[in-house]
Image 1 (cartoon, rainbow, N blue to C red):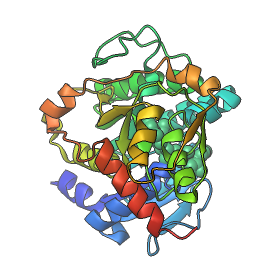
Image 2: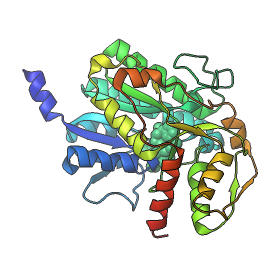
Image 3: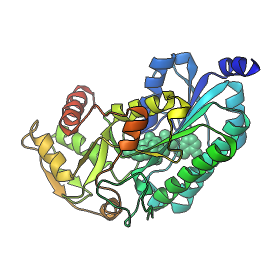
Image 4: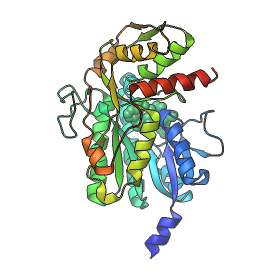
Length: 323
Ligand SMILES: NC(=O)c1ccc[n+]([C@@H]2O[C@H](COP(=O)([O-])OP(=O)(O)OC[C@H]3O[C@@H](n4cnc5c(N)ncnc54)[C@H](O)[C@@H]3O)[C@@H](O)[C@H]2O)c1
C-alpha cells in the first residue's frame, strides 16, 4: 500500500544531458506524452533552443550529492541519463571521457537504487563493438573489443547496468543506438556526425567534405525513431525485458556515397569530396549492419524511417529552418 503511494508521489521524469542532440528531442517528446510539468530537464550547460515551458535545472552528473538532492526534491520516478562525451570528442580527451561516461553513470545508478527510482534509461552505442566483432549482421551476443575510450565506456556501462539489475533489482533499460540523424539539434562530436553535416552543406549549395571514406558503411537511425524506441522500451512490462545489458537496435545502414546519391535525387548538383581522417578508422571497427531481432521480438521494435524517407524529411525540415 505504501509502495503504491510512493509510486504516485515519485512520478516525475528527470533527463540528464537534456540539451544535447538526443536529449533536446527526447525531452520534448516526453513532455508531450507525460505533461510539461512532469519532465525536469537538466544539463551542465543551458541551451537557447530548449523547448519553452519546461523546467530546466543545472545539474552536473559528476556531482552525486546534487543528483541525490534533485531526485528527492522533484520526486523523480524515472531517469533518462543521456549526459556523455561522444566518440570523436572522446578520443581528444580520453581520461575526461572515461570519468564523465563512467562516474556519471555509476553516480546515477547508485542514487536511483538508494532512492528506489522506478526505471532508468541509459543509451549505449554501436561503439561498444570492436574490430573482432562480426561486423555484418552483428548479433546481440558476440565478441566486443572496442578500441575507442567512448566504446570502452559504453561496454563497461552496459555491464554496470546489468550488475545493478542483477544485484539490486534496479530496472535499467538500454539500447545500443546506431548513428542518430536529426535536423533540430547539432550532433555532439560522434563518428556518425557526417550524416547530419552533409545535409547542411547540401542545403547551402556547397560541396561536403566528408571525414569518412565513400564506402564506409554504418548503421543509422532517424531521430524520431530513436526517441520512439527509448519511450517504447521504457513502457514495456518488466517481465518482457530479456536483455539487461543493452539491446541491439537499428533502422538502416548506409555509406557516405549512398547518402550522397540519395540527397542528389532532391539536389542533383550536390557533391561530396572524401577526405577520410581518424574517424574513418574508428568507423571501420564498428558494425556495418546490426541484427536487432531480439528487440523486435521482446517489445515489438519497428522503425518508421528508412534511407529515402529520412532524406526527404531532413531536406524538407532543414529547408524550413531559418539559418
Ligand atoms: N548522437 C548519436 O549518434 C548517439 C549514438 C549512440 C549513442 N548515443 C548516446 O546518447 C546519449 C546522448 O547523446 P547526444 O548525441 O545527445 O550527445 P550530445 O553530446 O549532443 O549531448 C550530451 C549532453 O551532455 C551534457 N553534459 C556533458 N557533461 C555533463 C555533465 N558533467 N553533467 C551533465 N550534463 C553533461 C552536454 O552539455 C550535452 O548537452 C549519450 O549517452 C550518447 O553516448 C548517441
